[in-house]
Length: 251
Image (cartoon, rainbow, N blue to C red; front, side):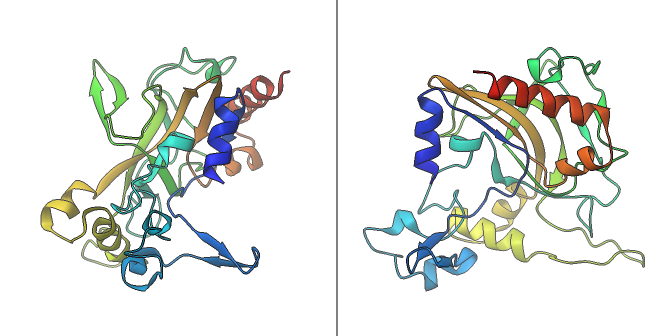
């Protein structure tokens, strides 16, 4: 499926994705009637582990045995997000995106400026988000180069996210995932759980990105709750969505 999408974009296709959690490689069996994903336990339980089909392991895209970053297709990875605004995952954190490249066409007719936040009142930045390892130069975010990740990715807007759930003392929060996802994903990627690995993948960000690939282009607004900006009438989310649809459906 990913190869088909990438080939479509290479030929001049346009892909828009308003969602997140682009994390798992799955496998369809029984003529497509059954979906398989062993996730964290794939290396032990998936029949293709240790075979010449190990690249089809039903695990994270960034797993060391798969090594096919999600950013190759949609411009972001699940591993460098992942959670925000619920449980102990940045519960008082930012609920919208901070704009960093307001001159980009995606922000046309929005009136948004550098450092503006949009969608926060409608809480569009929440639950699961996807991002990239990144660095700042002169006040602007740039992706850290990774093998298999397109060099054309531009980070347009972003906000912090975490993979590990904080559990501060006292009442007032209900905790959900705790450390299980954090440890499981670190083991997938590095092959072991170490303090260094846990620290490296503890913090991340959710992003809106744009990239060109061949003759085509991709726009991803990587948050599961983007739709709430539309449902709740946020004019910025509405205009950005309209800009993408107009550009990507204009023959």
